[in-house]
Amino acid sequence: MINVQFAALPERWATYEAPLRAAFAEAGLEVDLRLDHAPADVDYVVYAPNSNLQDFTPYTRCKAVLSLWAGVEKIVGNQTLTMPLCRMVDPGLTAGMVEWVTGHVLRYHLDIDRTIHTQDRWAPVVPPLAEERPVTVLGLGALGQACAQMLATLGFPVTGWSRSEKSIDGITCRHGDAGLRDALAMAQIVVLLLPDTPATENTLNRDTLALLPKGARIINPGRGPLIDDDALLAALDRGQIGHATLDVFRVEPLPMVHRYWTHPNVTVTPHIAAETRPLTAARVIAENIRRGEADDVFLHQVDRRLGY
Image (tube, rainbow, N blue to C red; front, side, top):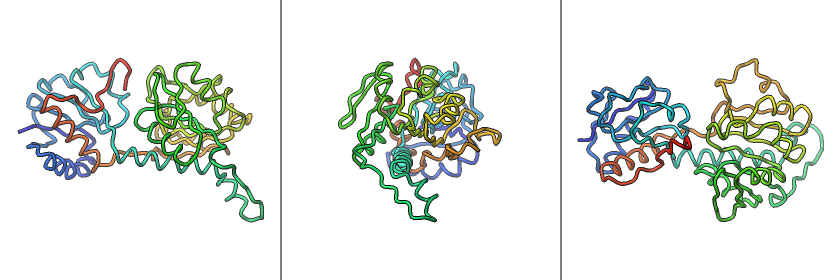
């Protein structure tokens, strides 16, 4: 019997219990799934970083901590977590992110906001074709690649940037500092899907925002700290940036006094771009437990040196 502890906020148990049990059965795993195993008896922890479990020292036989979150910045530095840590790469979450990003890129591309606001008068707005609208995706992990490839399928010329060199069919890939400058220089729309690490904080700042063509649009469903908020607001005020759609913030919920709420060229969405989907996430968890029991390599294991 494999002992699995579920460690997330209490209300998540009702959401995940049935999908996890079904996924374990489908994978042929004999699992005792509980909220309250004795720590020394636990083989795997299904985990959310905002749970009450923060000290992993008593989990002496635990083979892996399997996060339900895509981001691990809130837990990767925990010195008591010495066993393998796997982040969530969920097909359902990825599909949701692709749909959200594609929708907002098309909203900008077709100038839907302006068309709606002028529907009381005859003022045709004819957009260019997608092939005339360069898009840059910052971050080429699983989510970034999926979004970049969908946008390329729709005909947008897509440039992707990552810290390390990558090659993706149909995407112009750039990396490093010089690559970032190139990726921004022609981008009419920028999508941020980088992880939150010390190396990615304020990727968009006063200097990098100035590299963008005047009036460029920004979409951030990645992480709040990727953007220097003061620099973005200043760029919006002077028209360097035409509009920003922001789904993530340094402080959430976004404080009501924040200027993002009232700025005419900012759209705020409440961290809804992508959510872990219990049905598909449960299958990822079950596959990683199967791999652990077979002494196989875990999926999506975190490289703690990189922070993701």
